[in-house]
Length: 224
Image 1 (cartoon, rainbow, N blue to C red):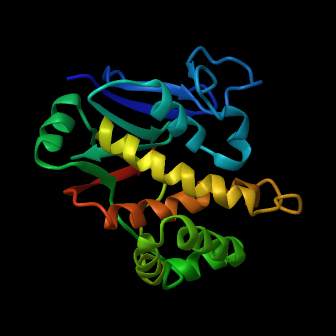
Image 2: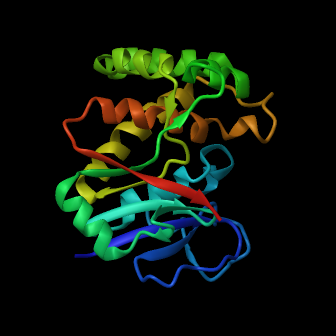
Image 3: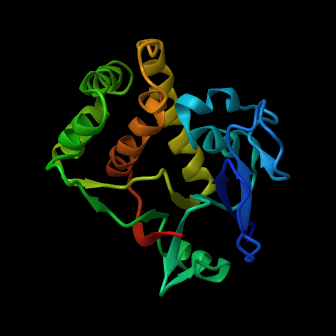
């Protein structure tokens, strides 16, 4: 099987030895070259990295990579089993039984996911996101409401899955975010809050999963 887990990075790091881990320089456009694959070849949105965060890497993976299984982790965050990074053998065995690997669910420290978002960011952006769902994919609105009132989150935009499922997810996600982008003025946002589309996507992943008939496996994520 051709299994690839891209490691999103914006600085040099110790690349895991397991061959499935491939460093991916996100936001590479106009930046110093680190010797890693950049997210600015082929069809890309690398220049939007300040607003889309690691999603510029996910977009590049969607548009430019062909493989059987694909995933994303971060240079500081990895999926682990029994204290070790997931191996190719383990990933492929799990994806014979399940369709999607997600990171372990986190519990919001502020009650609901909506309250957590309000505490960290701007509530009006969640409102805009819901309006976009209502307009372009209304069948997702109920799932969005359920997820926002839940206290469970899957942060980091980390996942491993079959490439076709990944492609389906990306087609939905970027259609939603592109419409949110058209309706949002970031001119008064500081550099942190301007990472808006990365923040929204972390909440939307669970919404999309809820609407799919797929088998989901959670694996632990650790920061290194």
